[in-house]
Image (cartoon, rainbow over all chains, first blue to last red; front, side, top):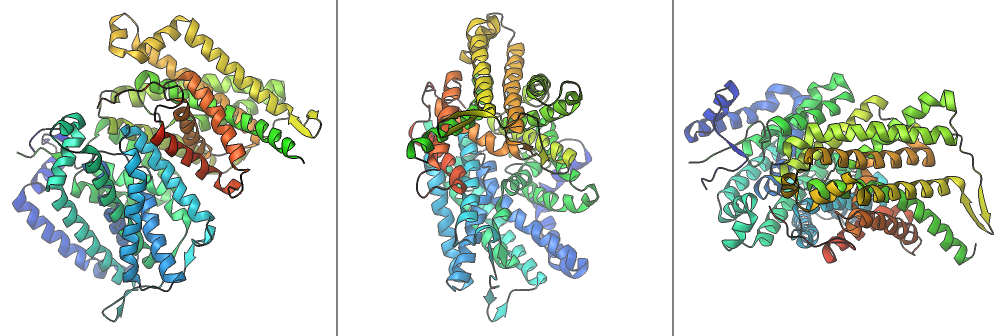
Length: 328
Length: 304
């Protein structure tokens, strides 16, 4: 666990380096987490409805970025079609609740199962191949899902599905922006806990090994295809759950919400913050959602700024803003 | 129309489409052969080529007109400009990353693709731009079959470019150096080959071919947009994989096969044109699963 990999860096003497180093010590970490969580709980009451909607969106991105991080950051596989799993979750909920009148909570397991099957179908055959083939196959897969959603009758074709009923929980309907804020906050907390537990599990160590040296990992008895497939499927589960709640939050979904552009935004969130590092990924998700708000004045130009930013990060700080630190 | 007429018409369409795919696929395959990099930005280089060609046509159109000569010259200008763009991209973005982990370089390539796409998006405000060269609608009538002169010119041009590339790679010193580098980069360096220059030449040629395809696509289809490179990038990659990635004749063959598969595939019952893209991506996935080395590729062990 102590092997320094290409993604690890020594602490830097800069102010930001000092801050992240401080936050990386366990005792300070707990204090920071408590403060952050308290701040997040009171946020909607302090910041008002507009900011609440934006932060809810950032939380959704954080959940999806954490899922994609398992694929990209933990297992080292480039997935360019992550929006596909997001779409599978959203459409499973949309179709089952609107067309078949199911209860939202009953559709969740189906959404997860559908995404897992999709993960096995696409990952199973391709994970054996070169890692760059996987990237392009996932890109093609993302497009297949979007085009299929646009062409099929059951998915509502180009106009999508609308009138998705918002879920009830213990006689209370989740429907206001603040309700959904807390739902996504809760989901994000669960996503973080699962991610942390996974990173420290046997599977997490296997991912680390496979990421750093696939051949050596295989020589040590790790079944690399199975381990990668596990990452792929867990990532798919995150995506489908995010998609399911996205569908009930907006009550309407359409194929264009699941385009390649979405997939790249999720990927950017993972890379900007620092692949494999949970606080980094969450920070990345917030940057991806908040930056367009801050850069609103720049209009279409802001996407270019984003793209150039991504390129600069890859060239000068490939391990992200908040990178993985070597554990001793 | 009789069945034979439809089949021949689709054959012509497939060959035209296949020529585009083949020209773009060549860039993927050459770059992959030499630096083992999947250049995700290649589809966007094609798109940039279409815009460079449009710009060239607008600039020289006043002097030489926008007929065959104007289009021909704009293809040439676009090839030169975008060829150098390819070299610049390689120098700035890929050269520092060649020793980095594979994941990092893949993401860098994606970033380059986004920079090109969003750069053109910003310049054009996301508008689709109409390209209207005066190439006329004349053609040859063979009974019920009509073949446009544009289609013939396109196929001939693509054929000439591929022939030129084949001669370059098989007959010239640079071509030999390129083949040597693709077999063993370190050993080639020891043998006195200037590997950096070979890489630059490879990027120049690959990007120039994509630019030619982009400019021709603009003149042929009559419109260009910042997003036009995305799909063809994927399709050309599919073509390169069908032919066997790293193999130059493979890319040509794969492009033509994919073009024909698409134009005939969409004639099958149940596969309308709205399923065309799903059809070709499914072909990609099937080829990768059952014959990942492609038709003409050599099997290789991946080293991480």
